[in-house]
Image (tube, rainbow, N blue to C red; front, top):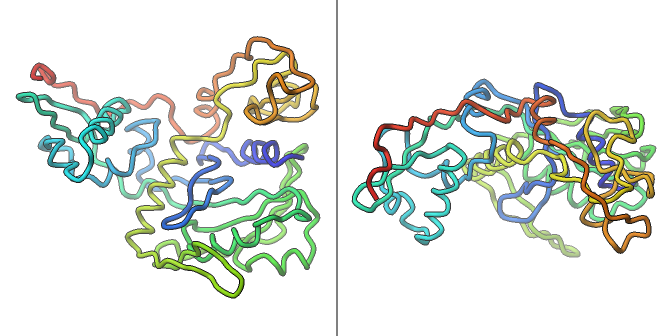
Length: 322
């Protein structure tokens, strides 16, 4: 099976009402690393975070000197940022419900609609998807980077391949291994992962050369911020395709999964819409895209909340200045 379909099938199986699943997210501090799949387990303050917004809250806004009390002048809060960039950030945070804005004498002032909860997520599980271990590519290097950085609480390799001792010897000892059958939706744990010390400082591998490895030291504070940023992206993004292909051969219910996926009758497998569907495909027949509501499916199947109550306080006359 192609990696895209494998990844969606695994996300479908992993998603439950007490966790949040997402895919293709940045999982690095100084380097560049995209994690295939991320599973977030809620922490004690999860409901408080979910009540603010269904979207990703930008880390610059979370880290800004803005609280829930006195409104702060936008120019002072984002002093080191270009004015147009600061205004765009504020506009977005107001739109998603994290900031509320007052206007006084032509200036903008902002405050948080609710205090940002610090302990809203517990564990972050990173999963590298490699259906065919006979074509590993950069797999082993990627797993070494994940273990060295320790951004995740645990790391797992998921594959369809029968895993041999030789395979296991090439995989870092801390990495767990799952053998996953995407058609049956069944998962066999070949090896449990070892918990990583996500709360400690670490060394991030940023490049590897013959006989030489480049690293960057990562402080506890940098890692904490990176984990929060990753958790926010996990919560806001999800894993489902935003829309399905406009093709007569798109049959989203044909493979019988609980999630609505872009299954193609002509290819007879789940396709990646951007890469595999369009006029260049021999089976393409232009048609209206099937109507789907991925947000409704996600809301019903996971801990993510589509329409939170929010905390916006719409005070009388709040925007009468400006």
